[in-house]
Length: 185
Image (cartoon, rainbow, N blue to C red; front, side):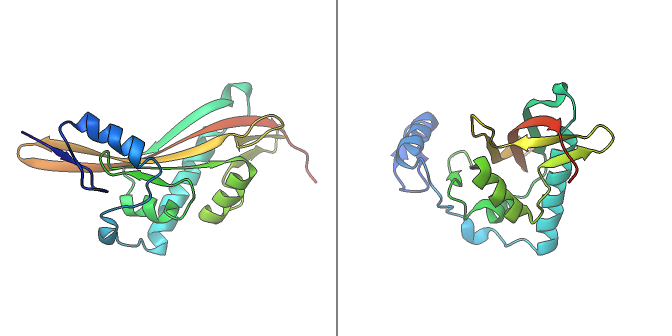
């Protein structure tokens, strides 16, 4: 009979679903990555490449009309695990699910904006201006009434075929976009 072991406390479960339930209940905000020792620290060039790629994709999602407003989703299909981990591992909202081999980290409100500017080392990652119409599209993290999140997720997909496994790391990001007029100072 097959058993499923928790990689955090080594408790065995009879089904994968029971392992997921256990992990969700007992290790909800887990930051421990059992295989962390095998994740090589990315070079500054590699970090810069993936940060730049993310910024370009965010800016492509930002528009200047009412049609550009609302929930947005972007995915980088080949995003290395170690880059994601080293970008976000020290954040308060970072968590890891060993059974699903999935990471999450989110940022919220004005403090989230400030922190992402530090991580990306670029103050203008979250907006795009159209000087002709004096409008800007931007990532909305806080307005007069609410705080919003930018949520990052990394997950792994495995394809088994002809006695071979192919793995793919994928980073996705969900955020809310808004647009409005801006004034030149």
